[in-house]
Image (tube, rainbow, N blue to C red; front, side):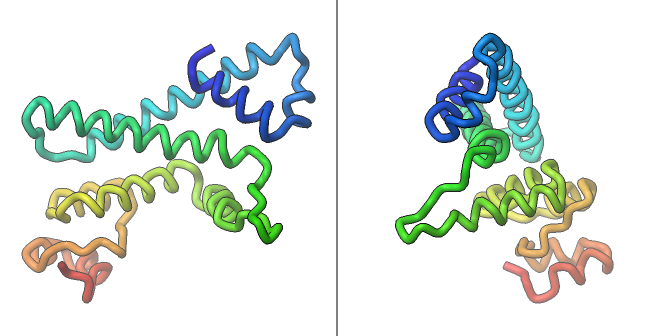
Length: 172
């Protein structure tokens, strides 16, 4: 069992004991091993997508740091979707269920998990990166045009009119 399977087993055992007890003890090892492998595969897939979003390659140490950051972002995204949201909703001090978690689950059901990953990746990158012409076109090719992005006027001037309208009044 990899570290993600062990984490899933611990989280379910501690936070959803009824669910944990419903898994026959003879099948728990296989169940959580399989879950851990799925999480690892998805983390690697999201990591690769994050890495591919970079259009230029910095020096070696910067590249290593960037890849590690992409890996950690991918782990956070996948674990939230695949593990944490499968556990019972957290209860606040007022006794209200955590509505943010419920909204994320509804969003994932409506848009599909891959689209949610792309949006979260795009939002994370938007905070760090300049919106170049190539970056905007990359998102367009994915079928996702982030309307909250703020490309520069020079970038906007290069875009086709159909894309320009999505960014009207949002230049940086």
